[in-house]
Image (cartoon, one colour):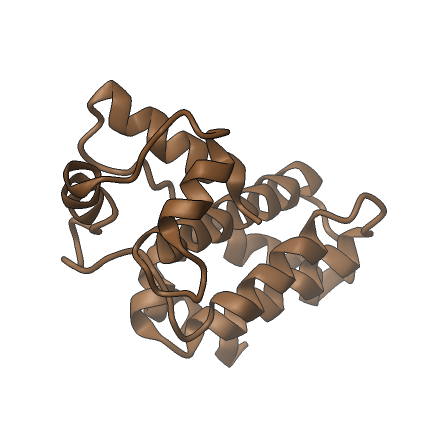
Length: 173
């Protein structure tokens, strides 16, 4: 589960942070890595691939935390926060009001949550965390993640700079 991200959200609340930090994957770098891989069969930018893998994992875990805390899973947000903070924080009306603004994407005006894709994305994020993944296996997992988010324009825009247009262009090649 995403207890680290939930603890981070509570820390942001306590610090007065108003908007959730959200750094998308660099679409140009993603496209270049995929194009090179398709053309040469190897990843030349291993550091870039690791960066993208880590960033996608973080974004997925953060979205999972948001989805739980916004009450869009069977889990109780109050109990999850209690677990993440070891009982040192209470989910109350002020926190809930702050949270609604905090998780809202300023470009889309909607919450950064997903009822549709969360289970599948969480499973794929777990795959990215495996220690012994080769570059080829990492590319395959990232491709699966992109296929999931590409089905929903709003998710694509949250995960990759360049959004749907970039993924459409990548899919055509």
